[in-house]
Image (tube, rainbow, N blue to C red; front, side):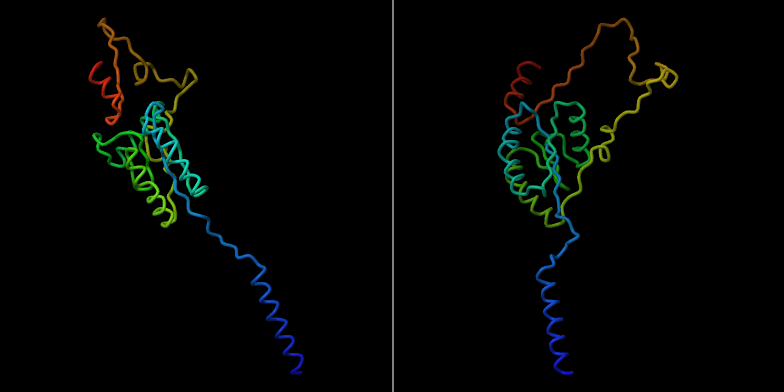
Length: 196
């Protein structure tokens, strides 16, 4: 009887040992992901430097753990989203500039700060388990699409519609101009001083 028990126990131990070696350990937890919003302009040298020299290196290093959304502020909706995010993150207007990155609880403004700080913030957020994506429609009311009525009966009368142009008095036409510039851009400041 003793001879039968010992080989059986040995076989059982060998079987259990083989399971622990050959069975892969499955992990249900996914890798943490850091989400970044990168606001830039095509005519901004500092934005181009960040887009060409900084972000590709980080994307290659962190691969699927880094999601970067490139947002061009020459699109008025994107520009308004940037303004709304700056307000939500309490960025003082005099400090606002591009390139600008929103990552987790942080805002990085300017090429130098982005170069010096972004990678350490990515590491910090990965250690914390990643960041939630910043969904513009959830955070920024003005980025939500405006519902419009297309059928005749559903339309508001023009006098009640705040988007419809109403004829004004016989005054001279007025042109409203907005000039958006970066306080760190020499060309922008030159135009502001010489033209406006």
